[in-house]
Image (cartoon, rainbow over all chains, first blue to last red; front, side, top):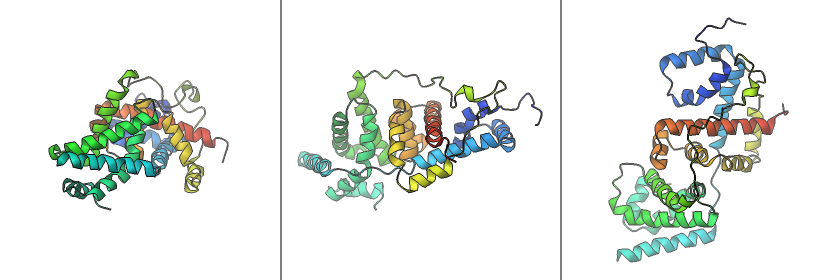
Length: 86
Length: 197
């Protein structure tokens, strides 16, 4: 176990900084402290990987299909607009 | 598939097929987003239909300073907010809810109950099409403002800038909401797969 220095981050702080880290909005010093923590902490490394996986899995949802009735309603909307144009 | 820019050109010349393509692309995402502001699916459908008409009527004035999608979603959010205004949504942005239950850390702030591994199990079940409905339900259950941000960023793939424009949020607030929402979803994945190794 390595010695804690005053400016070291603890895990409970790391989990609150993960989004700023992934968004690239941490300052350089803060990013270095976070990366130093990750280098020595498998649990927080796992946590970061899980946040990335959460984002990736959410991004794989595909929209549900439109119903035929919805399509018809929208054709009506378009034709209404066209008739306004004339 | 035509880009939004091409569809916009075709639409301006009165091409119904271009409209149909935009509808295929954005109607369902708009319905989901609208549902976050208004009390029922029926009202959400009305708001989205109104949005399409407003988009068509506004075509001449659209200067393309934002993307078509951002413009369209902004119209939607403005309308949905007005329609849903009766439903009070005074949830503070910076609610103090932590990303991880404090009881999982020891007195010095280190993990006492570290995250359990679940990523491969989840990937496998998503591949098999067995997890999508669960994830959708989890997103639906997020607090409204977190849901809107997570949906636009992570499901719809919008940039933080676009999401701020659509929802009229500051960059900092957008990030707080994204952080809370994503943290909550991560926890739900972990709960779902707890004990499966």
